[in-house]
Image (cartoon, rainbow, N blue to C red; front, side, top):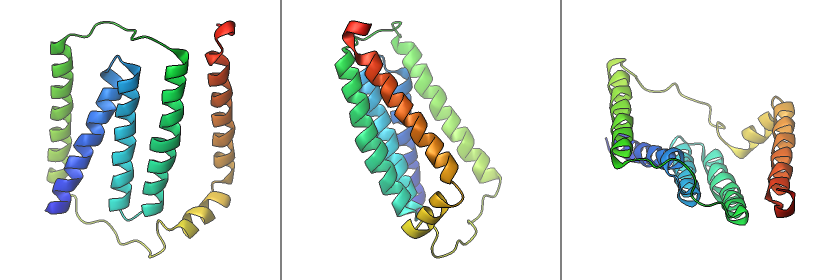
Length: 164
C-alpha cells in the first residue's frame, strides 16, 4: 500500500512538472518543470529495481541536459513570449489532467492488473545494459549520438547573435 501511494505521489509530481513544461510561458520555469519530471522518472526507475537507468536518467538528463538547456535559454536572452493564458484555462488544464490520471487509475484497477512477471537477477545491471548497448543497440546508439551532435551544433549556430 505504501509503495502504491509513493508511486502515485511520484507520478503526480512528474506529471505536474510535465504540465509546467508545456503550459508555462516563462522558459526558465518550463525547463525547471522538465527537470522535475526527469528526476521523478529517474526515481521511478530506481523503484522498479533498475538503479543504473534511474541514476543515468537523473545525472544525464536532469543534470547535464537541463544545465545546457538553461544556459542556451539564458544565452539567447529570450523574453517571455506567447499568448496570454487565462487563469481559467490553466485551472481547466490541470483539472483535465487530474481526470485523465483518475481515468487511467480506474482502468488499471478494472483490468485486474496483477503482479509483474519475475525477471532475471541481472536485469537492470550495468553489465546487462552495457552488453545490450554494444551488441543489439549499437547502431541506434550511434545514430542518437550523431543527432545529439547535430542538435548541439544547431544550438550553437542559433545562439550566435551576429548571425540572427
